[in-house]
Length: 326
Image 1 (tube, rainbow, N blue to C red):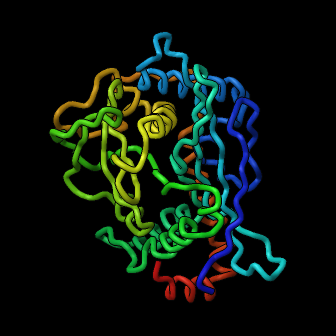
Image 2: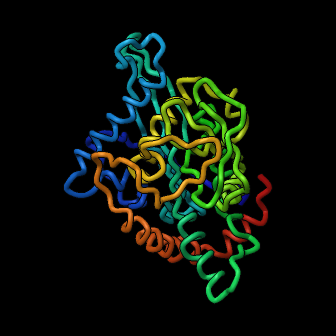
């Protein structure tokens, strides 16, 4: 069992999007597509993405309407026993961007990755980590924390299914950690903007490191806080300006909605910056969501993973992960 079998499914993320039954309810795009305001939420979020893209891709774009972004949700389903009739498990969900140039009529591929959704990550953070630290006086990590998840992700990126569909490595774009301090460097990229460095690695950095990804922090022009870009390879050389802009516009929009205290603040991060969700000077978007529900559901999703994926396949997963040398 050296290679896991992945099946890829695609669904368009647009104003008519409805989450599939396998999609985590806390996933950014799924969270928007629920409740009374679902259609309005989706319309406003997609408009924000297009507007931000055109603001960053401002050259030869006098009316700021040259481009639009199309989004696909990529679901990677995992079957541990491909020769059997066992149901597959929804292992990973990411976003793929496409760029439409209305001036030339062309449609370009953007970056795959962007948002990152994983039931096994819910299990690690909401079940394993909590159980490990219960009753402890000092916080610590289990010896193999994140190892299985990291091996699953690396197996996915190295799989035939991935290579047949995508020609570049994924880039995941997340919020900066509210526990760290970020300091500006002298490095400025024409699209990614001002680079920041953090004072210490975060738990997310450690976890994504197990997935084979490293991190850099940039605050694009017009942004108010740096974003964390997790990648494999060379972030600044491997992707075109428009590809990078597609990720920035998509993921900054999600962060403005879900973390407005940081990404929709009314003043920009300075030379030395510590993000906080207690910041009061910020604006709200016209998009409705329930942040408390997201926290509660993460625990439910972690327990679902334990019951339906980890425990039934414990021996098989442990053996595979131990043998994995990706």
